[in-house]
Amino acid sequence: MQRQRVIIRTIGVATAVALAATACGPQKTESVGSASSAPSSPTAGASPEASPSTDDKPSGSPSPSASASASPSASPSPSVKQIMANGDESEQIRELQARLKQLKLMSVAPTGFYGSKTTSAVKAFQSKHGLNATGSVDEATWKKIQSSSKKPTADELRPPTVNEVDAPDPRCMTGRVMCISKESRTLAWMIDGKVVSTMDVRFGSENTPTREGVFNVGWKAKEWTSTIYHTPMPYAMFFSGGQAVHYSADFAARGYNGASHGCVNVRDKGKLSALFDQVQVGDKVVVYW
Image 1: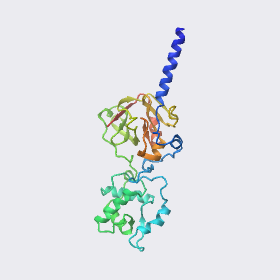
Image 2: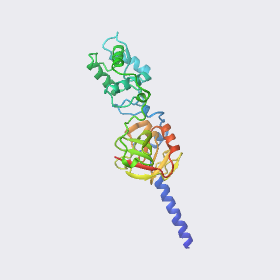
Image 3: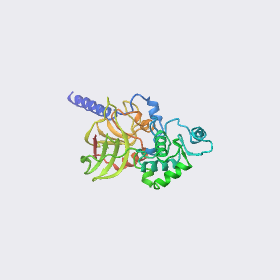
Image 4: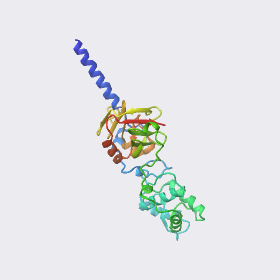
């Protein structure tokens, strides 16, 4: 009888641990099916978001060909040819955004997609330099922007994160640490006080917040599915009960229009895959404001 009690108690504890370890997934504002089928994002800068105030490419956005046919209607004159306009996507637009950032007219990292923020920045530049403020880039505007800025570097064209990395918490300055800032919404992988890699992250909602403090990676799973929310959690690194750093297809698809149930979501699958290979069980995790 005593042996049976021990066995039952052991099974109960194991079940509780398993449930706690998988208590994570996107908020119910999106169905499970769309979360698991959402496309992954190759780079942080190209991650789509639905918000009209961002220059990340929204789902269902017009193709470059579609926007090209629509852009002449915004021109002040049929004789003025627009090189770049709202809705377009290209490497030239990435360069445009990097140059506008040099000129302090844009604060976000280049994405290559011409959205509302790029339009506003171009209008501001045109107004400042006596050009017709259409918000679209014609030849005269492009030449003026080029002469007013320098050729962007590779880091300026593709910075490590869309979000600017926050100053590391003092607790991140020693050892091997995933240093996670809620304020800047970034994760910095640090070794002995030096930043090795960075990536954008998002957190739980007000009702299911991501815990703050100093933790350690308890265990890892390259392929994992939440047993509570039944959503995939690839490259999961658990650090506080059921809370983990993991890739989120929902984050890649919807950006900050969604939230997790407490986990630290990463939207750049390639970066997280590389980080997963480097992080060891026992490494420190610091979550802070």
